[in-house]
Image 1 (cartoon, helix red, strand yellow):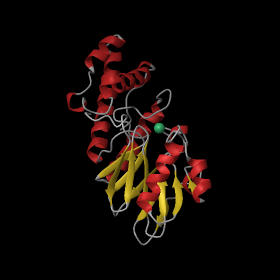
Image 2 (cartoon, helix red, strand yellow):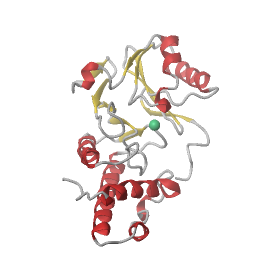
Image 3 (cartoon, protein in one colour):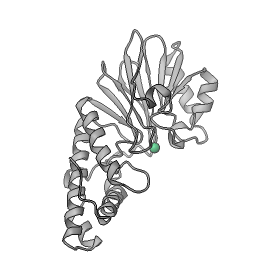
Image 4 (cartoon, protein in one colour):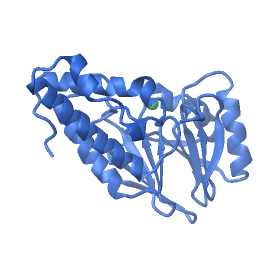
Length: 260
Ligand SMILES: [Zn+2]
């Protein structure tokens, strides 16, 4: 990635009245026609609230902000929740919502567009949610896509590995033209597909390496960062190594590989 979005946050228009403040932590918002929704609010740091409020007011004009959707409730996605809730009187919706946690989708509809929020819990956190805007072919995936990262916190266990595959297949089936991750540059369904292939490659490579009695170093050497992924945001810096480590740890526990 030549332009690391870390350096300067950038306001991007993704579709008609749909914007992303792209940075290490992405904050997005869109107009439903009779009110707007914001997706995630970053990690609080000085000046962020003022910067975001200025952008919201500049872009939305008179359109009221109605909803605050969180892909999950980690601190780096909820930093401005309290402030924005207070400022604009927003309804906060996340995966703890009974409807979402119970497996129902939540559709926010307006005259301008519809947004479907659905539960994808059990990978990054128990309460992960994604948001699909079908008319725009845009999908917000939170931290389920991390430009090469295996999206689990802590240890990868076999149930989670299989859950990743199921969730990725569901997300890929939506065939979104624009995929907005929680952090870093936007991508598309092609990167979701490529990452799933990468995850399968790591799973197979580590399991086979363990069965052959290879050392961790030998296994890692057999699984270098794929050439077509070397420009993925921060992949070569540290993400690939982290992902190999997570999958290898699972392979060392006697895991037989992905179920499907
Ligand atoms: Zn995050």
